[in-house]
Image 1: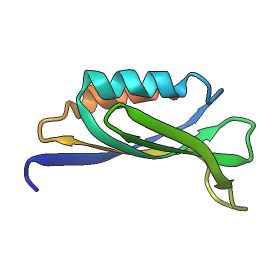
Image 2: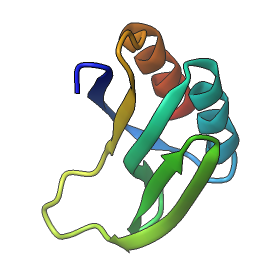
Image 3: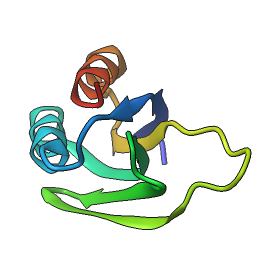
Image 4: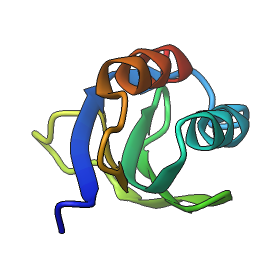
Length: 98
């Protein structure tokens, strides 16, 4: 699978889930990301926001409550063709999740 590349982005929490889909969609399109999956911490919400994207189709929904003692935060796996601009993608994801 040398033609594919993946990495995990770890970030903080977002203030609102509402604009997140559009922001992630723009990043996916700009960098030709094939798949994005993981979860996002939405401030003030007791549940994780699960994010799954294939191409330009993005789904996000609250899947479960954060467990007692579980460290809150966001974690997204980015999958694309080899040669992804990891630094630029991480920078834009950090901005989208701020």
